Length: 115
Image (cartoon, rainbow, N blue to C red):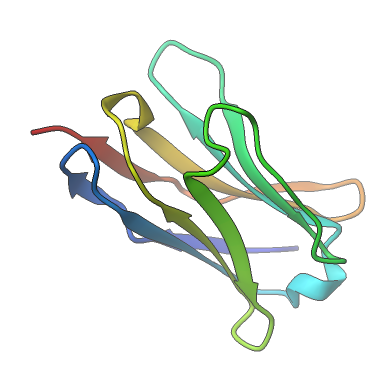
């Protein structure tokens, strides 16, 4: 069982930055991959960043160069640094853990990019 708790969402102006945090109840080195997804009401949840237990990262083109996923192993926490935010980045952001065949989700945190 893995419990995930996100924090750091909020309201930011276009061009601004936010950092999301995802605290895990289990060592993140023992989890195959940890991701950030986002979802807009009425649309499918989409992957925005992934970090594997070996430290490899992956980003879709929509956020590449603007978002950075990182981790603090000692704190069992994964971060999502979001820069140059756009209104289209507005969504609920979810932390996800793929624990070798089992999926776990956080409760989500709202990010709103608006003037």
